[in-house]
Image 1 (cartoon, one colour):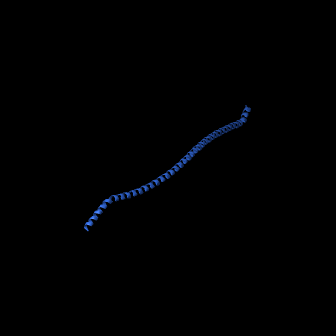
Image 2 (cartoon, helix red, strand yellow):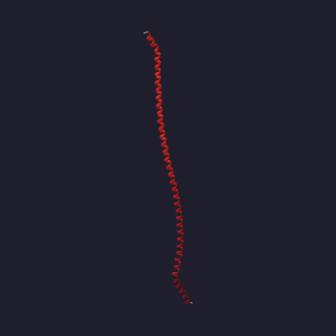
Image 3 (cartoon, helix red, strand yellow):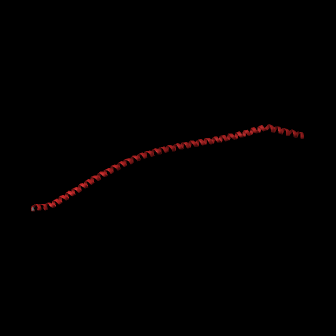
Length: 140
């Protein structure tokens, strides 16, 4: 019995050492599992970040393409607007020249109408003058 107690006493530090080693291994295994989980989480976050990056690049490319298309459309509209302004200016000049020409023609027509009126009044005026001349002759 004494040997048994001595063996138990001698084994006690070994058992304690074994328990500490088992606890250390369990703690190490828990740390390894935590590291594995952390790595999986980091890989998942990296994958999601890459997906977001790809989506952002795709959207940026789409927006850049849309911007380029809008800039092309704006340039075409500006060019068309400039052509329309030029066309309107030419039309305005043409109409102005036409108004001037018609105004000149109207002035000429009025002058001719005045001449015609004067010619129409001329016979009546001539008769009055003849009568006035006859009266003067009679009076003389």
